[in-house]
Length: 190
Image (cartoon, rainbow, N blue to C red):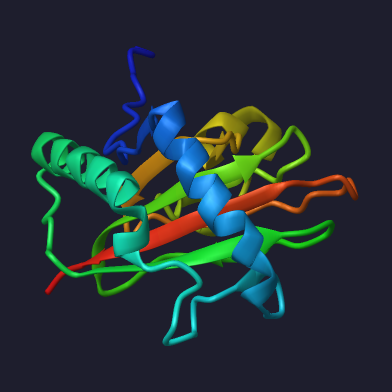
């Protein structure tokens, strides 16, 4: 008898929403004139490793309060621990820049808020947490590509929250007219 069923198990949640336009405009007008202060790293311009960030959380208090409300909703719906310590950084991508796959150990929830973006901005791509592709002998990527990754197209004002263990990457932008600036953050487990 050929009665069988394959069960796709254990989805990983992500949360997306748009921030109010007035708050988004305020944050963009404050941060964009400062992006020339970002340090160029291998893959992107960022203040991730800098002690002094180009924008302090209290300068964008309306945005941080709004993000905080969404963090509470996400935590309540998923059960993910919501710590009190948040680390943020700004990233600005140019043509050909990307960020290879990574996760954020030591945190519970991570997020990306798009300060600005245009149609040429590389996607934020989430990768399957299922290691199936590493162990299968006959894996057909075309057949299963929907299960391998999920792309989020950057848009101004878009907030994306996800479990910090979820592997993700930023895809290359191949157009010189790329605009992609984001505020990323981690909520610590402590």
